[in-house]
Image (tube, rainbow, N blue to C red; front, side, top):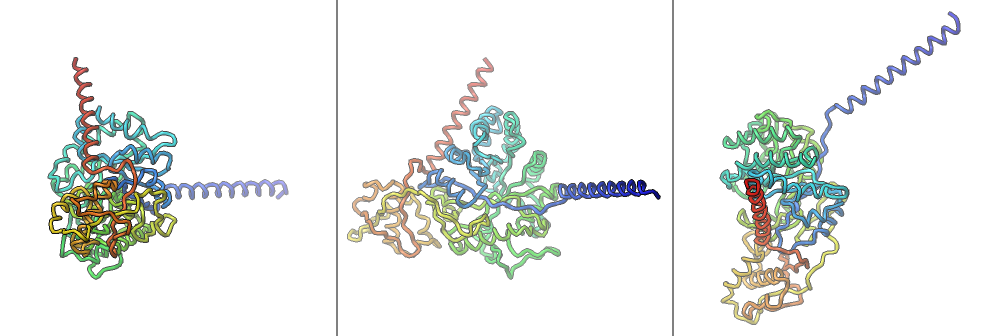
Length: 502
């Protein structure tokens, strides 16, 4: 064979090798793009604002950023909160309260107006990164007796169309945070939605699937423990238990995983076993009940974070943890309703003033929580019962103070339960005094109160000093302002309809 022929053959072999190599690279790239991946769960927080001592929203946003918390869930479209979040880069889930669902479900105009006021005006360059809109909060809760159920799907459909009109339907996803009692089973693999909810859940998950939205659920092992004396306490945590639940070949060592898989099984029965799941609320309170304390809260939340961020998943979803997990909550909310229990005001990983309650590693870079900066407190003074006065007739004053301020730590199981009768009076007097922004007359109580500059806190029972903010509001004020906005919306809509008829 001639030398020229040998060179030609060599070139052909090199070209063939390069083609084979190129094909292998293409195959590897395609495999990387299409192969199943282990999901990376993200830790976010719920930011509630039902407080007598509201931190300035800018302080709260700095608190989120300092702790590298990149996802936050709001219970309504509070303009102060959304304004403070502009340019922060934090991903936001904006909530719509249940009582707005009737309006949004019955009127496309109301839906369009809500989206313009609360979504599209913020989703701009250097604006707010709104990723989800939550339609109601636990609208299928058993205690509501179906009150909001008829409005959920119509509201979803109206809002989806409203988002499409402003070209945000593919970016902002609609979700419905559901309560864990919407499904049940003796064992996780037998999970199914409640019979009375099967029809609407079928419609809901079909809508979510069609629009690329996850299923959002709130899971509270604490409430299982609080509500049943038969519930094994150690099963609520993640540290191992002698009360494991065996379900075929699967073994559940904690209530969270069992609850999660019960939902997975329920979704599978509807044909959506692979639907992504987001935990909208999960946490543990630090006061107001026997099992609500700092140690239990830290143990649960740290165990939860470690469990989720390990990416081990659950028996029905191995290697696939929840998409996102929103801790409940960021701050204590002293103006929340205590109807479910006095612990309702103590879910925060931070106290009302943004100070960490206990060490907690969120797995987001910092090994401990970082306290809020630039918190402006009222002067260091407290109101207490005058020890020189006869306090036998103080009961009427106690009822007044505790009806407008927070006295939940005084109850059975609370951190201030053991401070005695005079201590209880001083605690109530001071709570009222701080809510009233330390106005001089608010520590009178018919001459029974006195102002002191020495901190009267006793052991673990802390008597608070309020924060200075012009936006501090009560629960009734928040409800009132929300009601006024929606009364005007209904009036405007009715006027528009009337004009069209004319």
